[in-house]
Length: 305
Image (cartoon, rainbow, N blue to C red; front, side):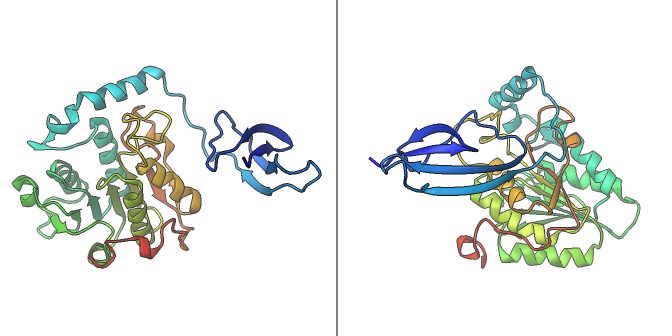
């Protein structure tokens, strides 16, 4: 068969005959590197079948060491499914880790957004929570709302409490649709100021990627983005191994392709050790206005819905 020797910086790593090969335990140091593929079925004097160079950069911030028992607690919490029906805000189910909700309200008080966009309403527990916090962030005695919570979902099974909560607008549409994009653009004009966006809809990699492509250009410096459920799979400590391509894969790829678009908020992400939003606490930077999209417009089935 046609096999290739994989060589990194002049050092042979392995020989493979598979079209898709994953190298485990290989962690190149920061700096420039060269990857070479040598065809073993050709004479040794033949030129390399492939040569490419790549750069590994130093991480902007060092990640804190999280004790193993925290990761075990995180998995235990998820597998108990206490989050599914037994975690509520104002009597309404909210599929959230309580410590994440605590961090979210701290962010809201820090950046004081005038527009909060929630992707994925479900029952509306988190919707009610966000509206309650926003009413405290802003002057609740003002007869005119100076803020808005826009919650977006294709499902209409929302608790009446959420629908009746002051400042909430329920918008029924696909999250990555042109209708959703235009509504957010309208609300940015109606409620000028910072924006907070939380992605908690369909947890597939492709859908989250499309959401990132839609919302990133709508954000300005200082706006805040949460990507939830990146804890499912793909990360070093998944709570649902085997889930498949998840929000983790989407956000890691998107940020890698748009390095100037967001700053990863390490302090908040790791504040309580466990989080549903691994690599998902992001603040918009000034740069990155020209967005590199992993998926083409043709790959968005929701554009015109």
